[in-house]
Length: 117
Image 1 (cartoon, one colour):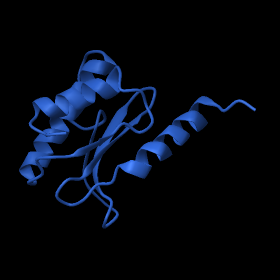
Image 2 (image 1 turned 30 degrees about the horizontal axis):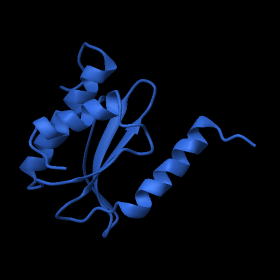
Image 3 (image 1 turned 180 degrees about the vertical axis):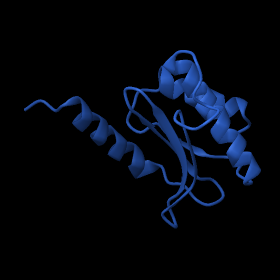
Image 4 (image 1 turned 90 degrees about the vertical axis):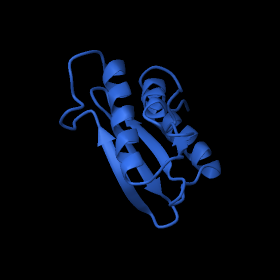
């Protein structure tokens, strides 16, 4: 039986999570993408806590423009928050999505903001 789109993504995400784990010094930058919005958070997997988050729903981020442009702004906003809290390097978790479009723009925005992958 064929898998649905979301089931495929979940399988890919589990395969990625087998190899990627975040620590307090180098947290995991995980991405969730809905049809309208995009969310990113830094997670310390050892303690099981979210250190900080940014999304396209935040004030100051949601602007006019395409969804890919907004995703880049979210990446920059997350990088800005991370540098303020002392995080310089992260492990990127694309969440089972292809590294293309909005996910790629978010990553590039985070890199421009000063995060190292």
